[in-house]
Image (tube, rainbow, N blue to C red):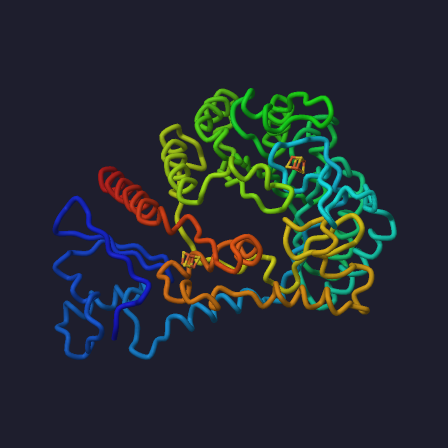
Length: 460
Ligand code: SF4
Ligand code: SF4
């Protein structure tokens, strides 16, 4: 047998004990330091171990800390990554019925006002999805459900609720098609949240149309949020209306996620937002931080405000501690790594659709016609250039990068964001925050498990 190449060993306050973590299985254990030597030798013979050592090795093997001599763990990682990537049982569609938006956020990568070549806002784009494109989409769905695929839709924009009638109409048709073909349909939405409370029926209709979760963004307490996410034109405030919408979602039992996009201008104000949410009885809503990244040429002017992943990682660690201390539901469980599946941009049966029926692999490219991989209504006459573009996305994998192949974080990182690796970093992968904070995150999980164990032994 041999130790896994994905083991991490960290000391504890007790010199006789150590924490071990494996990034392939994400198992975590506490072991006596006197027994750690087994994880430092290249190979050992199980048959020659004394009985009590064998029991210990059996436990280690269960957590993936030791593996059989024949195991090639890199191949195991590749196999798990590719089986999931080529899973054909589910189609994941991101659908934008409009790219119009009622907000003018300072860091928006869609930036409808940009005049980049091929970018949205050139006057050639449909503002709302037309009936023809809606029918093309339904024809496509009708075709793929016949192969037994379940359908998962994320409604996106622009601001999708500006086109809520299109969403509800399409949802009814998709529900009918999937029910007829006995496949599953589920959906979520990414919205700025402003229109959720405009009409008392909107949230009920979301529920009726199988939209099970909603992501909204609040970038800090009122004055900070309103200085970054304001109404288009009037630059009016948006915070209070969004908060009202979140309360409505909660009252209607719709799973709600609040994203806080952070950069230099609001990084110090996040905890004040937590105070506001607490005052509004919203500490059970899931909340998480997002890193503002200059994805497109339209974001160049914003680049100097963005923070690097290392700084983001430090902020995120402090944020989770704070959530826990303040009694937020999202802070109850420690932020903990898991096996990183392929990004939707690299998967088959996954694409982003704009109101013109143009398809893309990545959310950041929506509306940029030069990045389109095809037309939803014209899939049989695929143009070669678009086909090659799709192949570029589908064939991307972290195993092409020597740094990733030898990296112990590979199973939980998988080369980070593909868009960054392909277009921003000129072919270099962008390490995810685990690289900077893994030990702290695992330690915090370890402490909470210990606390739990102490509490349960006290109550026995
Ligand atoms: S709400 Fe979204 S799409 Fe609209 S301006 Fe803000 S970031 Fe851009
Ligand atoms: S991107 Fe960085 S952290 Fe991630 S697997 Fe590659 S080298 Fe490791």
